[in-house]
Image (cartoon, rainbow, N blue to C red; front, side, top):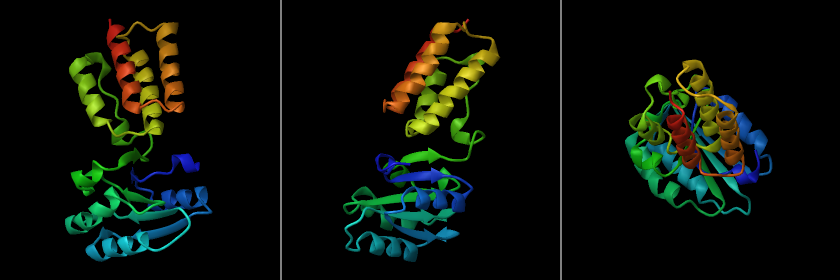
Length: 205
């Protein structure tokens, strides 16, 4: 994980310790603070704000991990997450997206780390795929990062082949491969998913 990949975000996972260790090992030269709790309370929010406003010459990551975040604590964090001090990045780790208020979710990229069975990588029923289903898919994944989107594109390709409802040829397979390359080059994930979805609709039998 490079510095270019460092930005404030929400990580959905059940493996809190594993993800924290991955972040620490990926950024050994950065100042990293962890605040872990079963339930994230107002005192934890105050501690996070205090750590974020400490004077430092280094980039810093503040990891906030909890299965539940109280509403009052999230409201306390909202301003500093929206306008963090220079060189400060917040990473919120939780097991459920619903644990966070929409106001928090709307300000941060959401990264699914549940693995291939995670709900954020669910592939729609391609046998009944239409424009409405594409719209829903785009809405559900509008904040997905490139890593998740690459996995979703891969799953869509597998499901399209398995369903037997699409005209599969070299051109369509190349389109899937090109979509992965576009993500690697930094194309917006939502653009890539729209492109894949429209191509699938054109090839539906």
